[in-house]
Each structure stands twice: as C-alpha cells, then as structure tokens.
Length: 170
View (tube, rainbow, N blue to C red):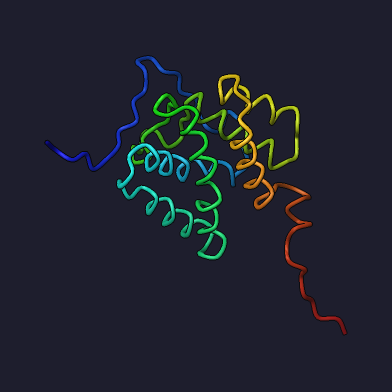
C-alpha cells in the first residue's frame, strides 16, 4: 500500500476553465485563489501539508500580521464547503503554474460569494451561495462566509474598520 502524499484535484474531461481576470474580482480576491486551492487540497487530503503552503503564501503576500489571519478565517468556509460538496467541488491544482490564471466554474462561484459578501451585497451573495451549494442554502457556510467578509471587508467598509491614522498637527 502506498501513501498518497499529494492530492490531485480531479476535473471532469472538458471541464470549463475561464481566465480569472474575466470576472472582475478585486486584487485581494484574486490573491485568495491560491490560498483557497491549498486549503481545499488540505481539506480533501488531510496531512498533505497544503495548509502550510497556504499560510506561507498569505504571509508573503500580506505580511505576517494580516496574512496569517486570512487562511485562518478562510478555513471555516472551506471546511463547510467540503462538508457540502466533498470531492465534487472542481478546483485546479494549486501547484500547477499553467492553471494560475484560470478558474473553474466552482472556484469562480466561491470567489463570487466572498466578493458579494465582502461588499454586503445581499441578493448577489445569496444567488452565489445557492449556485455554489447546488440549491442548499447551508447556514454554516453562510455564517463562515459572512464571518470572513466581516473580518476582510471591501471598499468603504474596509476603511471604516481600519485603525485610526495618527498624524502630527502643529
């Protein structure tokens, strides 16, 4: 018996891929893709140490203080999604350089859910959840997504949640 050390995401033959840039996600969301892929790999193949790669990438991208919090906050989203969809969630291999700029339909729906939740866009977020979960409006996934969105909001909400800036007045 051989031990599988690396999970290989299985894509259906002819599975649709699209350029990540075609969706209009912000740079933060685009950078989440690699981290999500590593976390999905870890969720489906525990012990693959993919969580470590996710943390390294996040730390290098956003710095240790904020960066390490991102995979920690994304893990509940991934955990709940895998509980619902299991290996039926199609995603690209995080180590395949040729797939970096491409997303599967499932990956785009996951990013769309987070995109709309980060902007507090209720209707589109609800639609993205429904598509992502194949019609099952799972409260645990929604709660995990909203928790991530609250911690890492976009736009004006992000500025309001930031630390007050210090300035010299004289």
